[in-house]
Amino acid sequence: MKENNIPTSPNSPGDRMSQGGSSSHSGNVPPGISESYDDGDRFTNSPPPGLVRVTEPVATSDQEYKKEQEVQTRVISDMSLFSDIVEYFDTGVDLDGNHIVLNLECTLCHESRLEVPPAVSPRVHPEEATSLEPMVVLPCGHFFGARCLRQWVRPDPTGELFLDDCPLCRFPVKYPQCGHNILIQPYYANIPRHYQLPLTIPEEGVIPNFCAACRIGWVRFVAKQAAETLYPQDIPQSAYYNRGISGPRDFSRRRGRLRTGFLNIFMRMEREFSHW
Image 1 (cartoon, rainbow, N blue to C red):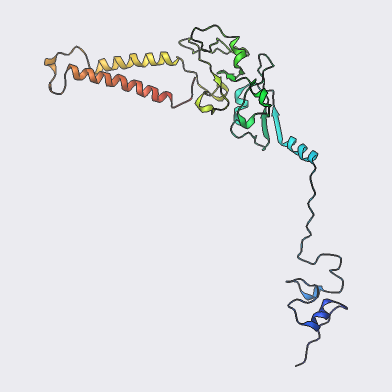
Image 2 (cartoon, rainbow, N blue to C red):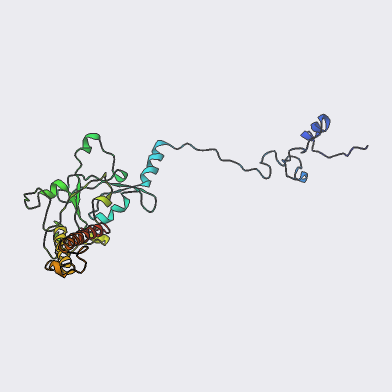
């Protein structure tokens, strides 16, 4: 059988392959590339078709790394409204993906640093951590250091923290109708906000017209009136149609259940929405 003469470039691997054995690919032609591309030194100084030149990785210096980290970290220290910072408490990042660090100070003394949740807390020395001051958030949204704010409040025999208005905006810290003061408590950074602080006014928060004690008193009064209207107390025993089922003692129990039911409904509804 007559062999086919395949032209190859001088001194190409094709000459050696034709002498030592056959191959599925001839010359420098990579798999999947037509042999017509092989014309001498085409691939000597350049990568063959279909291959990608990979750039070698370049080491990043410590200075460049620190600079990049600084660009990705956003330090906030000039905020006075709780609604402007609370959005970062859970995730610790803003919409652009920057890490948020809250370096806040009390707006009364401008010295004490305030305690914030771990996700946005700056790094502090363990000895400095004990000097951080819990913040107090008012219904208007302004926040202060708890120790500083106590110097502004009027003395209270119970030891509770009450004040008449906000030291910055003078927003009344009272319930509009009954006039009782709103109880202010420190905001603890390690406890979720939902369990300790209602929505502030800038967050569309709600201040009821009456304090909790006044609302409970009103519900008790309404419940008593409703119970006595539905189940009167001045009905003689002889007036009941089913004396074995209904009577003064039975109505007394029904009145008690009705009053208790009113209070249970009130307390359940109190937990259904955020309010002061």
